[in-house]
Amino acid sequence: MPSKVFFQVAAIALIGGGALTLLINVFLTPALPHNVSFATTAASIIFLWRQSASALAAALLLIGCVGLYLRQAERAGYFGVLAFTLALVGTALALGIEWREVFDVHDFARRAPDTLNALDAQKGLSLSNIGALIAISTFVLGWILLAIATLRTRAANRIAAWLVIAGFLVTPLLRPVLPAVWGAAVGNAILGSGLAWLGYDIFPEVGAANK
Image (tube, rainbow, N blue to C red; front, side, top):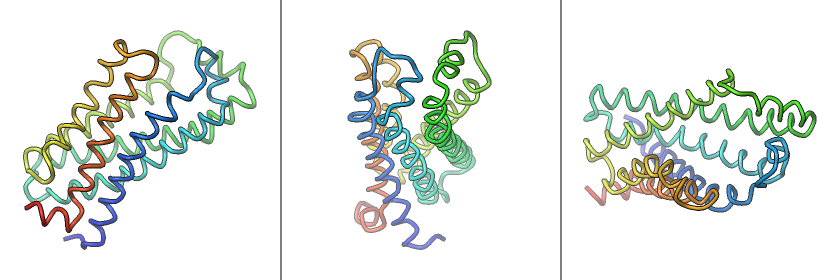
């Protein structure tokens, strides 16, 4: 069984990943340049800050999902194993996407903006778009299933798990309803709150007190 220290680290990582998810989408995403080319956005310092923070959030969630699963592993069964595997792989892929945007896309936008805009303007799905779609889909599905596994095993606060599910589901619904990027901001604020709450609830002392 993992040590108490590991669960503390995993809980803090999950809290940090959730908090960063909330802060990124409430403060940094709305500050991105709008009504400009993709290369102009990607070359901006706000884009660099946002993607760097997103990469850090993904790295923290990668650690946090391990702690969340181990908290329920004995009761989660095969469903829990599947959920954890998808969440782990999806988060790792998401980290790779964010890492690429920090070190490749931002640099590409500064050095060859016309080429980046031409690639962005191409119709149809490119290999890059397919790769990102696979990463995002696996991340979303994995975390929804892991939240469902948490509900089934009662390993952490049920409201927190429902917030994670709601955050993923309402984000695409709010985009056409709220102006500009605020739909995504609200949805991700719900998601980030749920993730941070799960982290707080699996912290050893807190979890023991709630049992």
